Image (cartoon, rainbow, N blue to C red; front, side):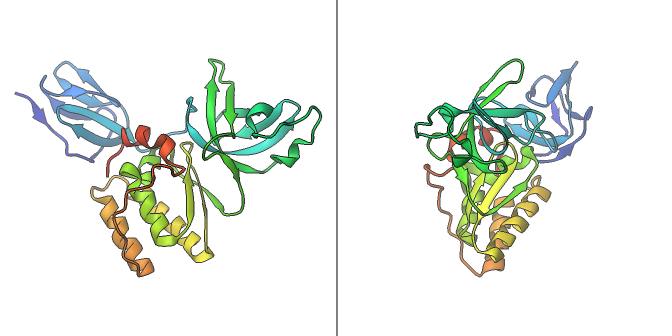
Length: 255
């Protein structure tokens, strides 16, 4: 007889038996051993019908094509800009992907991106040798001016965004801050200083409590108490900066 031994959103350890019997099926972060399903990493259990998977609690960003990221320029070359991606690998913005403007040969590239500039970009290619091309030219892609940048665990990005953008939408509504969440674990936001502090506090709270069920409702109450506002359950505008990668994140996390 099959038996489920864990609960939804329970934290599980590598080697822990999650279910017994052939009725349940292993998925990401789990494996079958004879008639048992075990976890192969430290993570949060997710039960989707008869399918069991885990979402890791920690990890580093690994670049993938079409990811929307927040990067930082650290070098300028004749062919473009070298950029940090908050991971073990750096990327390159070729001149043709830096701006819609025509850039003549020998132009001063610091007019477009200088060393230390942050930007919202899209990974356009990743080779087997981990040579990474990045574009800063396209809808929602641009240089970031002002504001603050914080780092979060890349595995918590889906929780910060929320189901269909619900979490980040609430934070924007409560704080009136502009917010962009990169899939590489960098978050940019800009607004009144006190509200920027609240964004930082809220995101830290989401990171700490990401494994808790009903987190969206809990964060809603937290923001209402902090701001005195009533937060409505508006769906995020599909044209917002997070929409490009929302679907992939929502496949991994639910609220």
